[in-house]
Amino acid sequence: MNLTLRGLPDVRIYQRNVLTTTLDAGRKRELGLPEGYHVVAANPPFAGRVDKDRIVDDVKVGNSTATELLFIKYMMDSLLNPSPSGITSDLAALPPSRMASGSIRGAGGEGGRCGVIVPEGVLFGATGAHKELRRQLLENNRVEAVLSLPGGVFQPYAGVKTSVLFFRKGGSTDNVLFLHADNDGYKLDANHDTAIEADDLPGLVDAYRNREALYADWQNREPEAEWKQKWWFADAATIRTNDFNLSAGRYRPMNQTAVAHRNPRELLDELAAIEAEIVGEVEELRSALSNADLDTVD
Image (tube, rainbow, N blue to C red; front, side):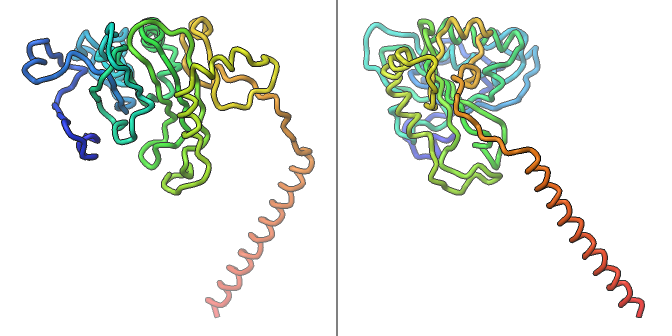
């Protein structure tokens, strides 16, 4: 729908629930649908549930009925398999207008690529279905990056904490780049519509595009040195031993910067002073109300 609203050409919308219906090869040809997609960019529904007996086998992940898991399984299977030759398209290089929610076909010789917004629970959930989905992502695909977004980035519509998962179909994962954004260029309040100067996203986009060079820097770092960057890596072996956890915070290097703590007695004194001020104002209000009552009686 976003593609149509943005005025992009060659947009086709089909009304179908991909979690409860399937299309065979013949029907896809009739509809003019491709065998798979080179690029998928999506923001699927969160926290939905589908009746277990209605879920088609193609998207099943264990016994889960959670839409956020089933949609990712559908996206994994909908990407084109790697081909021997062709032009490689880079998801990060796409203009913003092509990053709208939905699927995009393009040129590419490698496996199809996906950028999908997921609720944080997908990345660290402890159910068998969560772990199995993440296992498939790492072992049957190349997970390139996980971008942790600030909490409240989708206000005023939703306050759920989210991340963006980037992966390419085919092969297996060697290492994952984790990116952390504290600010997205807008004030993180209930409206999220006031522009501010702080914006981590441009720098993180550059880090994603240069991830191969950054991985070399990561390997050559001093392990004991303080890490101040908003990106870091974890190898597949480490992720596997952590139940395939893909939460960025799980692997963030410790920041050794000393934190200055105020004397707790000073804090207690301030709290006592504030309390005394409140009590005084309450007494003034009580006195004013008493005088008002006397005036009413007169």
